[in-house]
Amino acid sequence: MKILVPVKRVVDYNVKIRVNADGSGVDLANVQMSMNPFDEISVEAAVRLKEAGKAEEIIVVSIGPAKAEETLRTALAMGADRAILIETDGVVEPLAVAKMLKAVADIEKPGLVIVGKQAIDDDSNQTGQMLAALMGAAQATFASKIELDGDILKVSREVDGGLQSIEVKLPAVVTTDLRLNEPRYASLPNIMKAKKKPLEKKSQSDFNVDLTPRLKVLKTEEPGGRKAGIKVKSVAELVEKLKTEAGVL
Ligand code: AMP
Image 1 (cartoon, rainbow, N blue to C red):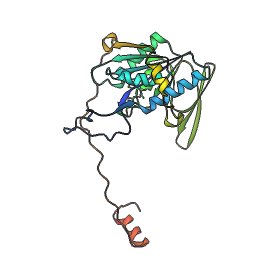
Image 2 (image 1 turned 90 degrees about the horizontal axis):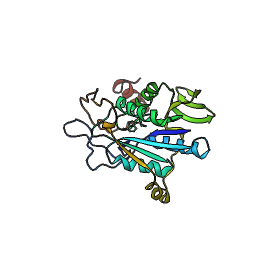
Image 3 (image 1 turned 180 degrees about the horizontal axis):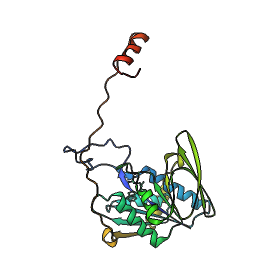
């Protein structure tokens, strides 16, 4: 069985992001970029299935600028076998991403597609669900544990107040939650080996997908700063302030 894992190049989660002066978006100049953290979890999940003898090949795919090749190389160093870069020159919204992934899935015919539950730059949480619909495949979202038994995938999902266990039949699309696993670091020898693994380059024009944005960002704002705290002298004063100032009692 093949596993397809989409990986997105996003601003590194450790970076303190700056909003453009005109509020049109986030300043990406000279900013450290990395693999979307949920996609690292997806790659790790795929590698573990392969190590357990339950998958033969892991194909990673990224839709983005030429530099997304670095992200794909990281995934190859973690254990993926082959990479596909679909070069695009602007923002590609989740529906267009899902349509391109569907085109790749039509060619590769994966039994399982492991998608991050959300990209930390747009926080859309749309791609996996739309891809499952386009593929006509089963979907299991927000997986915190997966177990493959033949063509049945058992998935635990964190829901309000507990865990839900479900089963889906392959082919399926799974979206990964934070607690699914702890992704491995790519070792230096594996980083070197990854340079020789196959990476196929395609262009957005190879796909008959309408990339016209359907969404317009009106404004981007930084979160407001936190107000300084105060010290109270007694419990009575605390209760009074909670009632009159904070309005929480
Ligand atoms: P989103 O729906 O944008 O929050 O993204 C959810 C997931 O879809 C990500 O974690 C990736 O697995 C996948 N994805 C989104 N955009 C891309 C992209 N440009 N290239 C590859 N995978 C993507």
